[in-house]
Image (tube, rainbow, N blue to C red; front, side, top):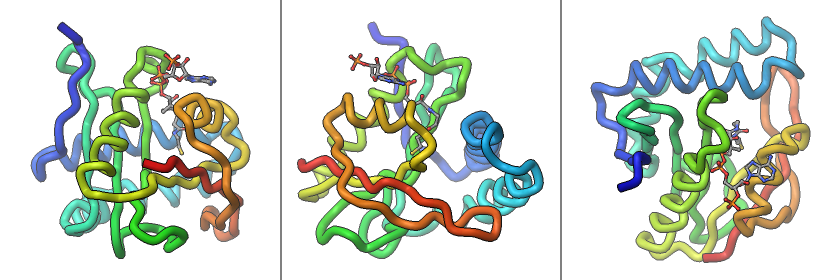
Length: 172
Ligand SMILES: CC(C)(COP(=O)(O)OP(=O)(O)OC[C@H]1O[C@@H](n2cnc3c(N)ncnc32)[C@H](O)[C@@H]1OP(=O)(O)O)[C@@H](O)C(=O)NCCC(=O)NCCS
């Protein structure tokens, strides 16, 4: 039996999400960004208060991935007005897909992505899309391997300035 399980986040797990969210964001981006910008972004976007608001948005869903009952990463999906950009009609956005560094390369990311595809189909969406920082080649290669294609760019506000994300899409 697989030791990997995915469960929908419950309200009493928001503090856990806040910890995993802050840690994975720091592990992914601290090498290329000023410490003060990282701290400010994390304090705002991964606070329990902010995540509670996002959790309560009816068009967003959070999932935690577990390996041997230990939470190791998460997925955030958005539809309708929860999407960070309105690029496609009738689409589902992967806003966040993060696995703790110590648990990467063990298929956890792939399981989360497969769940996103399943949810998109269940919801009758025609497209799955995401934005990924142009300086994150590891994630870009991961998404390409799973069938996503680059189809443009959009801005991502970080540290008081715009950074560029590739927009990637997968037809469902
Ligand atoms: C990108 C990320 C989600 C991938 O998750 P992961 O659990 O490490 O990847 P998996 O073990 O599930 O790999 C799945 C497949 O992708 C491939 N893959 C993973 N990383 C890869 C890379 N850097 N280059 C090429 N292929 C890669 C694996 O070989 C595997 O291939 P398979 O389908 O043939 O088995 C994870 O590394 C991560 O959380 N990174 C930091 C956060 C991040 O950048 N998130 C994306 C923000 S948009």
